[in-house]
Structure formats: structure tokens, C-alpha cells
Amino acid sequence: MIIITKKGSLNLSINAIVIFILALTLLGLGIPFITGVFKKADDLTSGRFDRILAEEEKAFMEGCSDDFCIDQTRFVMKRNEEVRTLMVLNNKFDCDIDEAIITIGGEQGGSSNFEPGSCNIIGGENAEQKCSDVSITTVDSESILSKEKTPVDIKIRVQNTAKNTVYSYKINVKGSCVFDSQEFEFDSTETLRVDVQG
Image 1 (cartoon, rainbow, N blue to C red):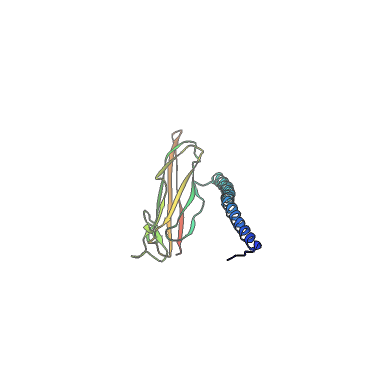
Image 2 (cartoon, helix red, strand yellow; image 1 turned 60 degrees about the vertical axis):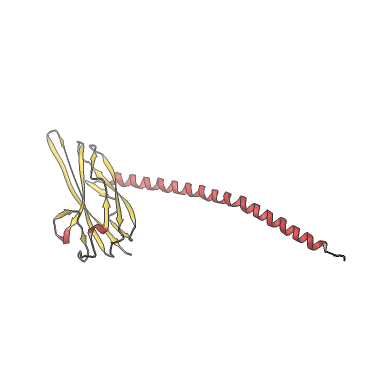
């Protein structure tokens, strides 16, 4: 019995196999190259973005003329979200402040009494709403050299237990120093609001 095959069909299948092998080889070599190019571009842009942020923070620090300044005082956040904002402590005096005391609290129930660890919840606090639903952390105290500005990070984290409402906190900073037998001091407060939405 004699089997006759067509030479054209054999060549076509060999060509298809060769093309398939070449395509796999190029794909294997191309993927690392393309990912490397994108990684370099990402590194360059993120580095540039970091530099822009640093310049903005520097400009914000230089522009602070109050006893202390907060870069942002109102936040719209979701549960389990964390953000950071910059606070600048500004020593305008001719003496070093050994301890600028930073207290985070609020006006419980809208009263005028500043109470550390409390806040003012829009609509009133009930069993489902607690000031601890939002944690705001920073350093307890900070020293500031005379005529200097010191940056301090404020970290805000919304807990999973937070409700959809506005939590209002007070940031209070006190500091004092003595120069030529004269005492200089400041006691300033700024409101920080966290609007929890979802």
C-alpha cells in the first residue's frame, strides 16, 4: 500500500510550528522588557511626584505665620481609611520652646469646655457613635528652636466602627519660653473635621 502526501501541506505545518515557536520566544523576551520599561517610568514619575509634594510642604511651612498651621482641616473619608496631613509649629519668639504640648480633643456635646479625648459629633453622640471611631495621632510634645518652624505629622484613621457622620475634633497647641526674664507663650486651637461617608 502506498501513501501519497502533499508536500505543500507538510511545509505549511512546519511553517506554522516555526512561527508558533518564534512567537513564544518573542513573547518570553518581550514581557520582561515591557515590564522593565513601565517600572522605570513609574519610578521616574513617582520620584517626581515626591519632589513636588516636598516642595509644596516646604512652601506651606514657609507660609505659616500663626502659632501653628494645619495643611488640611476637613477630610472626607471611608471606613478603614488612613490619611496624613502636615502640621507646622511656629516659634516666633527669640527663645527655644522646650516643650510644645499638642492635645487632640474636642468640645463634648458642643459645650465650650475643651476636653482631651472627646469630640463633637454632628447630630449628637449616641451608643452607635463614639469619638474613638476616628483616631487622630501625633507626637505628644515637640521642642522648637527660636524663630524656627517644626513640621509634625498628623495621622487620621477611620475605624471600621465609624458611622456616616461628621466627627469634629480640636487640635490644641501650647508652648512657652523665657527670654531676658520675660515669658512668651501661645495657646492656640484649630478645628479638624472628619466626614465619614461609607
